[in-house]
Image (cartoon, rainbow, N blue to C red):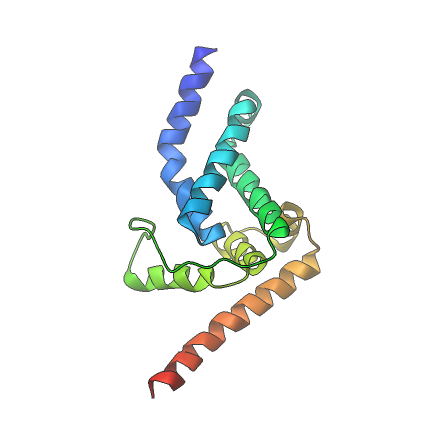
Length: 161
């Protein structure tokens, strides 16, 4: 029994920061990201033996996080957006950080679809299954999100002139 606990703790130490970044990308909020990771890891700890044997603990946690996030935004109808981006959440350049800030301004469902499509590289069918929506809804949410992100730079340029 102790061996399973040690392996779980090793997994959390090794992948915890990446899961927290993934949670931030989903939620756009550091506090919600931490809650999301904690909830998913609690669920993983309950089924660690089964998940570990399938060699897929990170996929399990990420899927759990995505589903939990969807459940949260179904319950909360009002969008909460924050400009408070914690240090260390960005991997690369300043422009990469700006992308995450832009994603954080999207409605939750649109943000989740883009994250699952482009960050997790999932198919529309996989995204639909995770989020509990149709493939058509996945496509329409992605289209709307990308259209919104394309419009913003043009609006910003007009405001600067």
